[in-house]
Image (cartoon, rainbow, N blue to C red; front, side, top):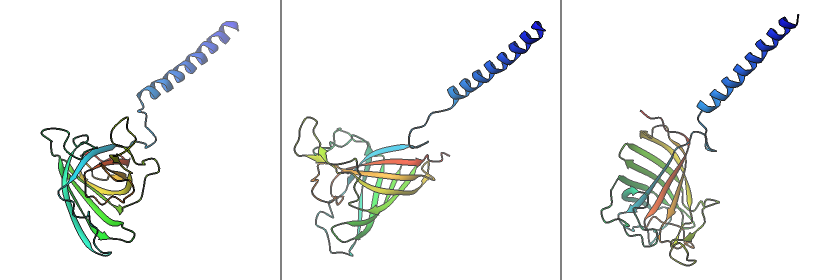
Length: 200
């Protein structure tokens, strides 16, 4: 009787240990995700070709903007000049829309990058709750500034960005934080994607 009970106890103990080992192995091999479950992040510097909206036209006026896209930190955030002697261009930025009320712009953006395009849209002046203006030079309190950060919707893409969606943050460089950003100077584009892009 004692031998039979000992064998039964050993068998149950073995099954429990196997179950614990299987759960531990599953957790080790399961990738962890952050708050943006499975999200991707892309970040670029963008330099407009011309400051065409520095003087804002009348409400209802249509406009078109264009510029070049570079890897992040290619542009000096304090001076809006190139931080590198030979900047590497990685794409073209195009934007169009209409002048809205209160100095805002209703815009669509298309970023043609090496492996596809990313499309954004929205109204300027919608600020991020955590992206206020700040000094561009570390250790200082005054100008030049960067920001504040504005938010636009990511509405799609093609190529490696096919199926992309989420939120894009636009942060102007060498800026005046008291004025609504009009895409008349370089800026940073950061894409926080909710669902990771479908790679081909």
